[in-house]
Amino acid sequence: MSPAVTLVLSDVDGTLVTSDKRLTPRTLRAVTQLREAGVHFAITSGRATLAMRHLVEPLGLTTPLGGFNGGQIVTPDWTILETTPIEAGLVSAIVERLSAHHLDAWVYRHDDWLVRDAGAPYVDHETRAGGYGPRVVARVDAQSDGVIKVVGVGDDPAAVDDARAQLAAEMPGVSASSSQPYYLDVTARGATKGHVVDYLAAHVGVRHRDVAVIGDMHNDLSMFARAGLAIAMGNGSPDVRRAANVVTRANDDDGFAYAIERFILNV
Image (cartoon, rainbow, N blue to C red; front, side, top):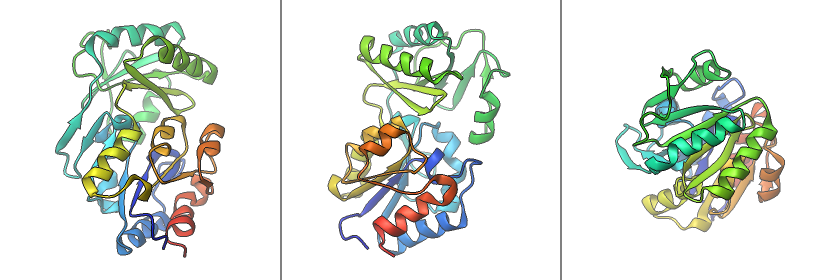
């Protein structure tokens, strides 16, 4: 085992699970091997924290989970440790900018997922992935207090990238990053996966240089910048692969397990 790594923090979609959202036997075995080697294991995701609850038992999680890209941190029994909402006055402006780029807007307020059309693209996909459905409302930004994440959804990756660039240039109070080519996740500025690294390192009592992180998309770059070892998935976006220290196999080729075996445990 690498003597440096004492905490592994993994992204979920495109990393820990396969494209059809499964935990493979090899992945479960790798997490068990980490635990047996005395290495802490944690997960973080752009998903709502509620959408990760089914992973706690099979993974045997004991560390806090970072949902909403770091916008909320909870214990494995769902006690909320920290929530970082978007400033209420920014929510409508975010929705307007997303709409200007022809992106549908979803709003998350804790466990409440608000959409304008239940039949819109990717709503069913997200319902199946997260295990719970949305609430349909006339205006997703009608209640702007307590909003943890706004998602821009669309089939045009260029529109997603353009909206991300505009939000970065015009709204310094938020963080905007892509969790999928068709999702633009907007959270409060301090709510990033890099913050999850900071929180867990302090919680567990390890140094940042002893943390290994693994991910595949733009929203993982902030945790890459905070960890001692950054591992990109083989299916990861080009900017993520360039930013990583090492690259593993794709998620549908047991890339997570391979990374644990090869780069962490050296087995």
